[in-house]
Length: 156
Picture (tube, rainbow, N blue to C red):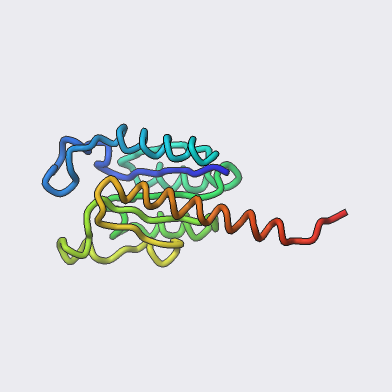
């Protein structure tokens, strides 16, 4: 099964921007850890990052038929983008929202997620480990989907 990892605006600046909030780890290093987890658990994984809302919407839509689940850190678009929310709802893939920082310990405007209501779950505040937790959760979701498929009667 395949996981599509979608990273939103400014995540390409990890390791440089506001290290006191986001830590020193670069996005490439987070992706390397996620790839290691995927390889160890027989999962395919693809990474995408964009600072542009429309490109993120396009990638979510392209995931339909290409991926089995989405892990997304929509960055600032988390709090503002109805378009990203609607794209996630439209593709109906299991989606996990991820944030490095604990958004509930930050500014009030960061505490409202437009996309959380259409996601399977939200992981926030564990730094880069948030992505590992998301991979564990997605792997569990995939196992549950496979178990349900195995219970379905075989069609002739």
